[in-house]
Length: 160
Image: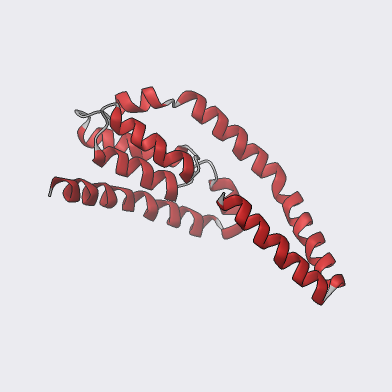
């Protein structure tokens, strides 16, 4: 439903823009299409890599690795898997709920979800191209470190 609302808003704003300046709107659409065209090969590569990763790292395997007795190695594994997998939030949170139901601990799930949302190993080449090597690696490294802090905080908060 949110997607329909956002598309509706975009169409209305596009119509307002076209009514205000038709030529400028046409140029903006063409510029956006060219930008999309230049990103498309990398986007397809990322999507293929994501499909391969998701085929290898299914929820059952992840649940075994981040189960109740996995400790710090489970947190590390969850962070690595989350950083590699590229799953949208609307899929990640229900998947996390299922992992919790199948025996995973909250600390490992927090590490998995936070790295899933913040770390982008699969998208790193694209990020390097647009933001530079140093910025992309620094951002991903800091995000990966933060995943451990988030996991520890969640474990502490749940234990209260």
